[in-house]
Image 1 (spheres, rainbow, N blue to C red):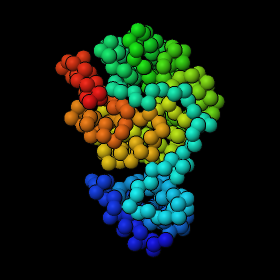
Image 2 (image 1 turned 45 degrees about the horizontal axis):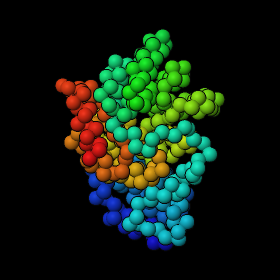
Image 3 (image 1 turned 90 degrees about the horizontal axis):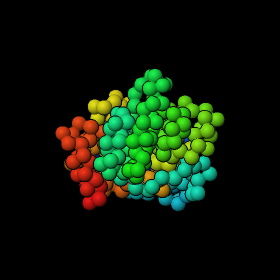
Image 4 (image 1 turned 60 degrees about the vertical axis):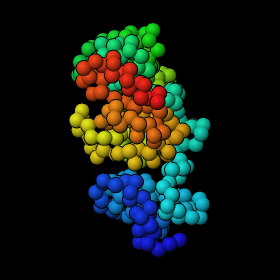
Length: 299
């Protein structure tokens, strides 16, 4: 295998253009001493991948080198087995959902859910913020009722017990919510038959999500967004493309600051769904905007 620093420079030379725009990150303390691992850890940190993602990539690069006998600095790793993802068929898996979820509207209340479902949006999510359990139950039930007869698939953000009780199609959880579930709660959720979507913001979180076998994986934020404070920088289309290749056996949802003008470049990565919030909720004519975005999805 090539000497470590030379191999790291070779990796950088091949991939710097694809991941331009990120500041270098400090190289984390290595957890092993293999040459390919060390080179990839250095290179991925220089490319701006934060510590746990650089570690994840370096381990995958080393696993591929051991599997193939080659360092392959010019080829970005994207084989699921090199990242330790579950082999198919997955031993742990939630109920499946369509591979292409299409336009995915993330909406603040049941009225909006019904409005966009009636406009033909194929996938909708209720992201209802409240600390009142009774209000949450009412809103979730209202959202389930609002999509009846429309064909829209309804995911409920966070409130998984209310989603089970109301008979929703699925639930969407962030990483912190997923980590907060006990083994018994996770089994209750899986046994309910609800589909599960999980938010991810990089390689380590994608590997974590794969361990529970969700129905789909959301990746973002792709572009800057003002809707919520993000712990990680916007991922950009270059990273989205390599994430999509790694997760090719999952339905994928791109999310975060995506407007109509970015649909073509996002869809070119191979993702089967784009989630939007402001592009609908803040639009002068939300139904017209939904129709235009669905047309962009089809084209």
